[in-house]
Length: 302
Image (cartoon, rainbow, N blue to C red; front, side):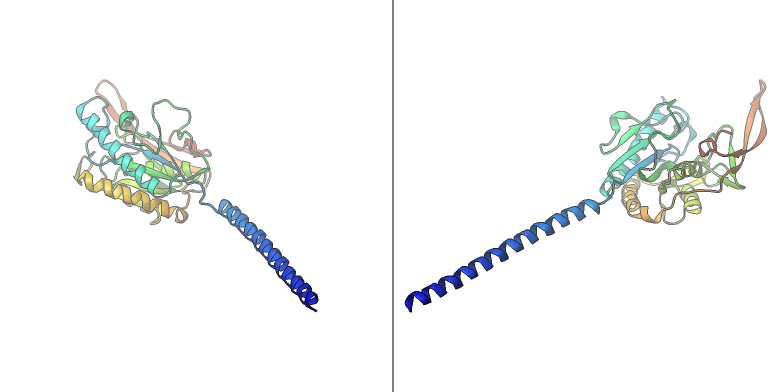
């Protein structure tokens, strides 16, 4: 009798052991499988690369309000203006990085160039020097947004600091499908060709107003000064403008899903007006040219 009880007890213990063992093995395999799917999901749904392309200009930079700061390159005023430029660039780069940008490429878009290499802040790559292959080197469909930094209002904007479109001397003006447009639109159209929206514009209040008109309220704008006339402005302390640029850049990263690439109907009915200077006394005459533009990269020169 005793042996029977022991035998039954042994069988019961054995069953419990194997049941527990199988249960533990099941849960272990289940846990491994769950971990695998979690890792797979994280990899699939991880935040996408957020590459940002910055197109710069000099007229819309903090502290810049005279053409003698922008037309020259090797004068005290010109050198100072380029230092101001690098300070604005640094603030925007830091804001974009802290806002989630994974890669930043900066194009020196001012005609006679503005970058000072030894003042480049880390976290970005810088394109400068002319001539260069193509107007917007490295820009393609892989970018999440374009920032127009240091922008100015189009030619003829009364309260726009240093307002012009392409050339302040020949006073160019452009119309696309009947709508007068400045450099903000010209840049946004070429970015729109790649499906890339303009997510931020910095400059004076007039440039910011122009950006909102064409790109809507989703595009973040940061005014670093207020124009009073073409070469006079109400300036703001750099400490304040750089803080605004930093926070604006962070905000722009959040605004990316709301911003749309800027496009207009193709082909474009384009018109250009500009001054031509002639003779020894340098008299000027107004020239008008019209064309049908089928290539967005020819919207300036046609």
